[in-house]
Image (tube, rainbow, N blue to C red):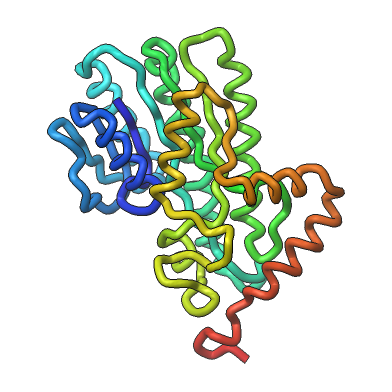
Length: 267
């Protein structure tokens, strides 16, 4: 059985598709506000849930516990995939969107995992947390997003160590720029976006490629996967160089992508 948050599009949707290709009889549960367009399988369930609302998440978790109680024996994979970003100077960004990002990118993953942890430990499996290469260094102009992914990366690694010796483990997945709706939602509504939802360049990877590498990492029992060798190189540099250096470098790169001049009313 797999449980996916944010399976309506992007990496979450690709994870569902890839999982069903491997095991068509799989029980799939998706938690998101919008219903996925893809087929969730004969026993698939979509739970319409606003993961930023604690009460809605708690109610969904109780339904999931019931589904798990009736599901065939076997391991469970929980994919904490939901998240979004917001591009720009913090002083220019909407405070409510920033706080919702914290609720979704961090709080929802911790909340859902802890509510399901007892049954997950009993059945075995893996808690898969979709972080980002942005989590390896500060990210000016994506400050809250990068910090939220840094939290998720470190929380996942710590959780995996705490689970050592049990039937349950955790995996942190750190994609780089991925062709999905993420960039449009984050404010990249004009060039340098490329067709398909990425930002162009050699670091782009499709959500299907990220999903396939994620499932391979789950099967291999890994605790951390950075998708793509170029992304691994950047993550390695981000984690080894002085923080002040990588912050300045990251700011210079992301500053080039500033889109104020493309937005209506920009000066």
